[in-house]
Image (cartoon, rainbow, N blue to C red):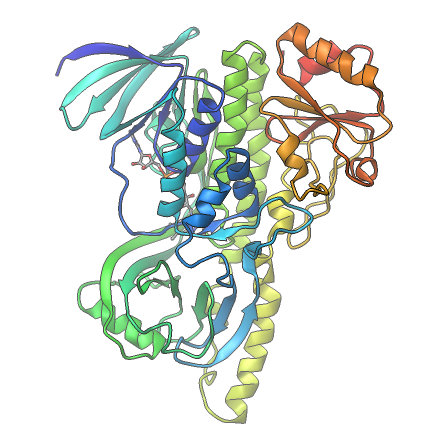
Length: 540
Ligand SMILES: Cc1cc2nc3c(=O)[nH]c(=O)nc-3n(C[C@H](O)[C@H](O)[C@H](O)COP(=O)(O)OP(=O)(O)OC[C@H]3O[C@@H](n4cnc5c(N)ncnc54)[C@H](O)[C@@H]3O)c2cc1C
């Protein structure tokens, strides 16, 4: 094959998954030219992620598309995000977690957007449709990254047009591998995954079963954990139109799902005799793996390309979106000249500890699956069976609460200790799971508040840095900050909302908020050497 054409862009993104789409939106929102290549059409009905968490939806709000995701909800926003533990869909109740993952609107004081239970493919459609409206973002489907080389000035990638059957060269300033678990870019930069592969084998089966929702007595829920010795599994509604997912978890090595036996398997697991039309069957395994490095020069990894963990707790896709957000503003800053080289290096410094922490949580959740909760006799009628079910229910409530009440993990992500964060002697709250403690300690996510008009404090944060004035500030401080930022070409807006007790929430009169809404610095007066502060937070 000949390399006929040479094309160029600022950032080449490999992979149109949630991580690649988030990065494309961050870059496109800042008018950075990017080409996103994807080898597949990326269609299908395998759901993968279903939990779009509160933080991801806050990013969608920032991008102006949270309402679009809400409108795309197949089950409707008023559908309860409860998780029911049952012996089987046609059997006894064991325990119930209400409002799992915080999907219920209206949102809480601590966040601007509730979470949403929605298939990953629907979220991807919403993200892609938005990215396609951004003039500097270009998608090339059926296009595969083959290889690349780089020098200190740029990257020269060879991509393969699968439809046309030819290779061409794409020159770019940066290349980002958002190319998933089997990342090509990871291999090309010589990074390797470290950790444990194959913690468990599982299946994901999508099927259609008219009447199933009415055929059980457990009420509406997003997931039903079936705790029985036959087929410990998860089952739940996917979409409008009687589509469901069925997930046998932690199956033994010799367990196989195939052909007409699949319908029988669902019948056996649920105890409900209905016609089950199988739409897709995927085997998947869980691992705990993290790349030994995320970067080689101008090539970087985000999303599943650099971290893989069990999906219990609903973190993986959301973490990939957050990677795209973190790297997006940093690449844009460097490409537009207001960010220094340190900014690119900080991507791994900041994100790796977050990945490690989330992986610990996901692996802890994975340690208790259906098979660990079954007990002989739990489906018996009579007082003995009832007593056993009460005991199992208590164990479930104790062991599984942290899987569905994750606010501390989701909002507690912080970058304290990053070279871009100016510490003030305080520390972010200790790691929490179910409860989140709002904190403006540098590195933390800026604490949220509602304004009197019903808008969110975050709605006033800009695309660049925001200097939040919370009370007792002086106009001279704000003017000086703007002047200092302008002298360095750093985009900075000031925001003086009228929110009662905001200075108490932020414990400072002034707080410098990064484009990703994390606190970079706080103080009671703008420092005399403001440019030095701004240089640090921009890695200049
Ligand atoms: C059963 C299951 C349930 C899950 N549930 C949740 C959940 O509830 N919440 C959650 O947050 N996460 C969940 N996850 C995890 C989530 O699905 C992944 O973390 C997420 O898809 C990763 O996104 P990504 O963009 O990093 O990569 P991917 O979605 O894997 O996308 C990578 C893309 O890159 C393309 N590609 C690869 N190589 C090349 C190449 N050389 N050239 C061009 N294109 C290439 C691939 O075709 C692919 O489309 C679940 C996963 C599974 C398996």
